[in-house]
Amino acid sequence: MRKRQASRNARRTREFEAFVAGAGGRLLHAATLLTAEPRTGNPRARRLLTAALAHTYAVWDRLHGEDPYDRARQYMAVRFARGAWHQHGGLGRTHLRGRSAPDGVLRHLTPQERLILVLRLYEGVAEEQAAALLGLPAERVRVICARAVATLLHPPREAAAPIAKVVPS
Image (cartoon, rainbow, N blue to C red; front, side):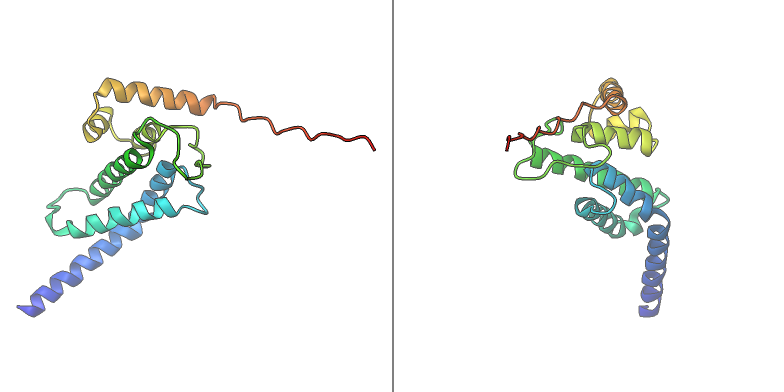
């Protein structure tokens, strides 16, 4: 009995390690896009990925043919949405309480816009699936995605650097 349990646990661990080896990089990139952190310094994205992988490992035996990548992505998206809600007072607000502003490629987007854009364009999740995952109407997801793409194509202008005063000598 113990040998069978040990064998099952070893198989489960090997399967999960193979999953992480194959999907970990893509999931980390998606998490980095969500958090709008640079690839070289992404502690929030790594925490998000770690939580998603831990959850996926915890439910590994109950997947029963379900795609573990989809499960990890769903968990990551929901956790990001909840975190953005608690940290920023909602998914649509852009102010950060005591935190530095994001500086990644998607820095001009709100957390909700980043989430929908990553799900729809980077991950290829269907509009209806993204809407169901986020509890939004499909039309709202379509509008937010279009607005996010427009912002990416035409980002707001950065503030000009202050001009130094020249003092005559």
